[in-house]
Amino acid sequence: MKNLFATSRTLALRLSLSAGAVIVLAACSQQPEAQTETPSEVSSVAAPAGAPAEMDGMSASAAGETAATARGVISAVDAEGGKITIEHEPIASLGWPAMNMGFSASPALIEQAKVGDRVEFDMLVTGSAGEVTAIRPQ
Image (cartoon, rainbow, N blue to C red; front, side, top):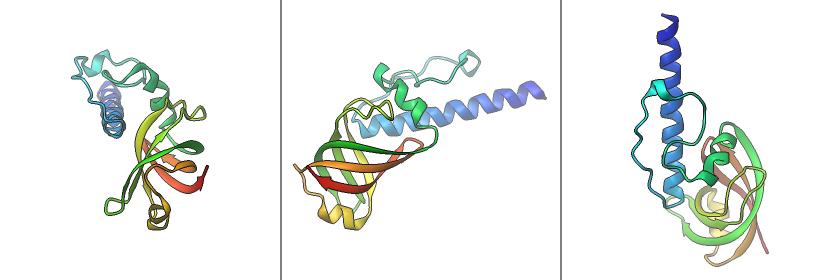
């Protein structure tokens, strides 16, 4: 019974990491590769198969809730979807490489966001999802 519980936890962790990586990869406009390992082959927590090597740190930092500040250029604004897409510089505090990524945002922030604006922004990262909480023009 103990072994079954450990296997279930490993599978749940693997599924959570895989789902999170797919969301992150989708936000980065990248496609995951098919995974070939079985749950019994999983021995450590790392980026899922198919994730670029530079995103390995991203998986590790995406485990909890973290506040960060970054700089970038707004590349899209989706008022209906409640998202701002920002081509941001590397975010050292999160271990994230530079990338184009969609973030949720309040209607007030979406209203002030303009495509092409260079900004410094505050965000709150929960799991693999980010929310812009403040935007300052640069």
